[in-house]
Length: 549
Image (tube, rainbow, N blue to C red; front, side, top):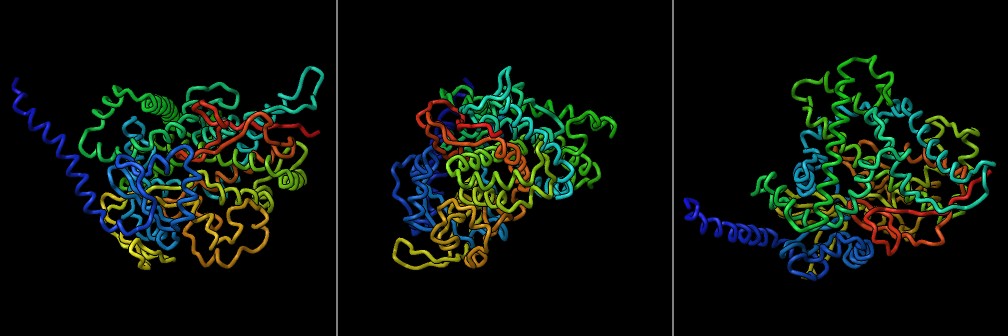
């Protein structure tokens, strides 16, 4: 009864607080009214159901073609988002003023709500990179090359066994879900080379963690609108209360997300406890470990122990690295590898040329050294072109923390008809979409064939316009692994992973599209393959494989 007098006050706050937030955001975002973009289709969701939906790629491409490099997107309850594909503005966002443009809070809030910390805050991220740099050097890639080849040969062996009976090899053609084994391979590789652990995913021994990982991005894509609202909710409501509410809501997709995150958190904690015990026992304990002390986590632990108190990461921050590595490494790389294999199936002439190069470079057993593998020109061209045209994560998100003015490499015409060479971005409430695929496919940069998959473009000098664009990325004049101090530190790891797998599969199998299934790539956290018309909440990529004697 004592609480009854507070009830009117609680109702008033519940009604007025969201209204105040929405009105104040509307006022702050008035400078964005002049930025051209599509009309809203809903006051509640703007165009976000179209922009972030599973079939968003055609909509995004049409929007970019019509409105150019700077687009104002109607968001939730009349708010505005910015999509930017201008290289000069992106340099300001990712490199020069990155403290003003923080990683989007909603991604962090989603994983915090699920009791899973995957995305590191900026100060932790800075310390993390400094400690981890030795683990991603060329010398270290050479040292762990045997792990890459051993797991690649294991996948090859499983495929080869599919074409055998008691009498020996069978010259038949089978449909194989390539995405399934790309995911298993990438997960076991990041486990062994990353943590000195094995999930046994390639052998089908672990269905818990690997199944959760497969569902992560398809599920995240279905929660897009809820994710955008999370920063507003967590600003005023404690996380444990939100978690309790989330469990009670009649929203099956959210419950799937909570189960996925709980599974990943539980498994990562088990790995972490095992790792700490081995590390405490000293160097002799790693002899029987999968990474033999060469794995990334071992190097990070050693670096952390030697670091000063100010630079040292806490146990919880180190634990978070396990899921960070897995989501950032295994998931994106597996989908990039699957995309390459799918493109090779669709372009048999490219596949044959690549097969000739790999067959000549590898021994009969598939052995090849690190330096020889990474220097194969046509393999490099195939990887670069795929990652340019089809970056696994086509966009990244930033939140503008304070008012900013972005200079532009290309002016745009605002809604009043005036040419503008800078963009005013209101702070505190504006989400900025860094349009990676928009830069990677910009015809003014790459030429009129920018939307075509042509590996040969990398075998001759690129157009002068590529260098003149000054794309602020760390890989091959593209934005695929973004840029600045928050660029993907593991892009060399990812490249080696893809090349090792291709070196074992392409010389042994001819790959062709399935006759029974049409493949579509949908937009989520990353681009993911699905069978057209399938209702399954998992990625699939069935392709026809024929063994080569």
